[in-house]
Length: 224
Ligand SMILES: Nc1ncnc2c1ncn2[C@@H]1O[C@H](COP(=O)(O)OP(=O)(O)OP(=O)(O)O)[C@@H](O)[C@H]1O
Ligand SMILES: [Mg+2]
Image (cartoon, rainbow, N blue to C red):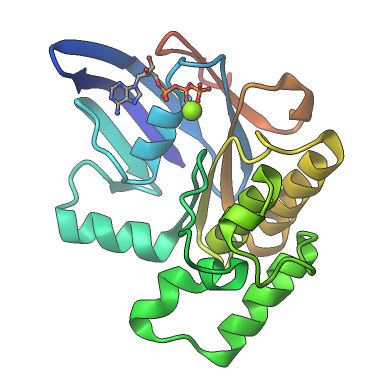
């Protein structure tokens, strides 16, 4: 289980403090597909960053499969992020001077790229409909195409936990459904824990777990 307990996050912007999350408590099941649903500015990205160890809560606790993220030191948290988490950023975070394939492989450069990783990178991009864009750079790609490169990058290492921040934000309805299907298939086939941030109710299916947030508050009740 992912357990979020009394988590608050205050962003300091100059002299102004923004309370992005206020005493949020909820749980999300492992090896399942969950949505974090809420309007713009409600704190969804903030919560996802905390779940991925990309940022720390101002107060409160987060545990993932019994392991406290908040108790980890920096090295442990870096390792968790590198080995276990595939993060799909809302703004893609692609490197401008690299091609689509190179962007997917970028997390592996430090350890050296193996041939099967390059192959898997191409296969993933093809599955996501980018067979004709493999050697394009981000400026030569549409927003939706960049988004799919970012998704392939997050999925390549087959992480235990996939955190996707509005992965369909730039996509039309058909492509949105295709991406969500890809994420659902990962969850089903590999037991990946998938958490998707969205503000669109239309993608939510009956069996999905949903955490709703609004104005930094979590509207969540433990299952009875
Ligand atoms: N790094 C930051 N510094 C200061 N304020 C921030 C920072 N990140 C987010 N905020 C503020 O915290 C609040 C929650 O932001 P967050 O990005 O989590 O919302 P969101 O639900 O993801 O919105 P959206 O749907 O528009 O992406 C907003 O008021 C935002 O302006
Ligand atoms: Mg956001």
